[in-house]
Image 1: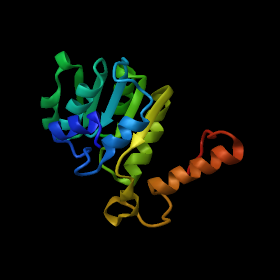
Image 2: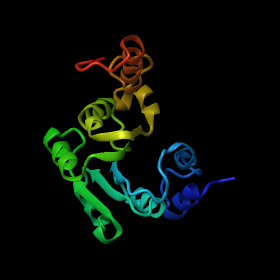
Image 3: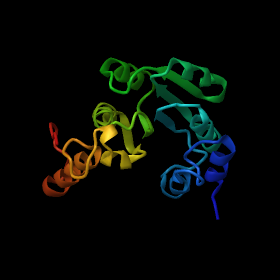
Image 4: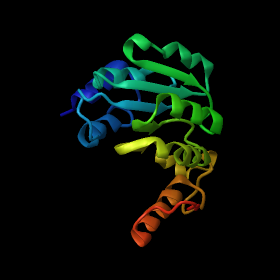
Length: 183
């Protein structure tokens, strides 16, 4: 039986729904937020704006910020509906700093941007400090870690999978993620 979040995702036509990636079923089950919480959400990768609308429908009081490199995505901004869209690259340090300082800290950051391994890692390192305690940082489409077109490969150093495996090692060996860790 599909959940309400998936129903909303299908209604809005986002690829996060169960007919494509099936992320919303998992989000409804595992996200630590109540639909009525006033959360601050950043989504990297706006595309056609359908995901932003899904989050607006799901989280009644959320402040939703989308970022995308495509200037056409600005059309999906609707401040009356709590949706802001900023145009810039997920690998532009100044842009990320501006967004984080203007809109952060965030309860949830969702990276559905370029899926390029180098970009995902860069963005994570720049934005993770802006995730609130008890917040979540989600990276979609991690399977691109194995695709050559995205800088991936099985067991290839520098992919997001190998990078995050390294963080797991750091946390479990040292009891924390040490500053300066670089895969």
